[in-house]
Image 1 (spheres, rainbow, N blue to C red):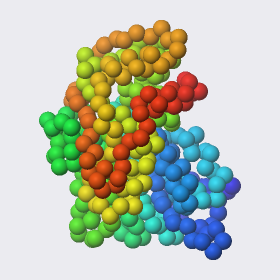
Image 2: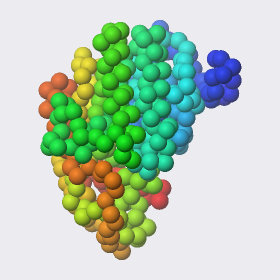
Image 3: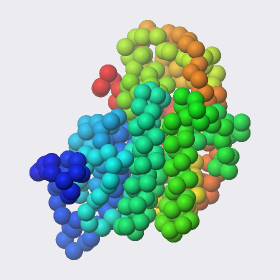
Image 4: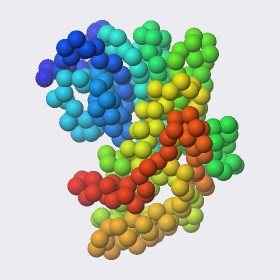
Length: 339
């Protein structure tokens, strides 16, 4: 392994881990750039595309990601890593078939702490990557979110619903960054004929989540493992729908290779209350002495969240396969090793 702290240009700050050329024998591998590669979803996407025989170029500034999520890939010939902020000019040498834009703070604790970085990666970052896709003639898939629906007045949420978002509220920095990201992606598709895909991701969980990222599921598991009270905001009757990460990655893989350019919801339509989730986790964690405690509901916290996945079923022949109990057991096993 060689580490090059130089750059293709003197002002392009990167850490590039270079392992092997782009060819294996006479076969030219498809190449995919995955931004946010060291994050929860990005690292699982790296694994999936490596396993599918792709050359993977991972990019991350490690603002919320961790190299520990992808260190198992460093020894592989078909993996390169760039330490880079996509809000600055992005360049990747050689051919590039696909781009997955998954760089962004994604949990409330992160984007409330880093509002400007969140807005920049959703505006300057996507602008840079759309430009790269245009130059390279790449197909680009962007990670949008169920948060574009805000605190919804339609339930469950389908892709034709325009949302109920407070643009100046504390969550607006994330919601509006993703809404802008969708808008500029569609503009490039309509104006330049760029091949684009948009996935709206609902609550996802699984190994490599950060225990302290502020989202309910890892927070509950961490608290239960430490015998601390499980913190429920509000009365706990607000609903969420939790999709296991392997199911989500399968949906994204199918969407990228589909011929559909409009937004597609990917998530698990099984809806439960936050309080029910806390109680399920208490039952799973053997020997915990944790109880439930309540705190005030944060501003603009969605009261309901459930995806309508009819479009994904019809176009991608996709639906989640892993039930919540099995997914929770797998995730708990991961957290037991890191808590």
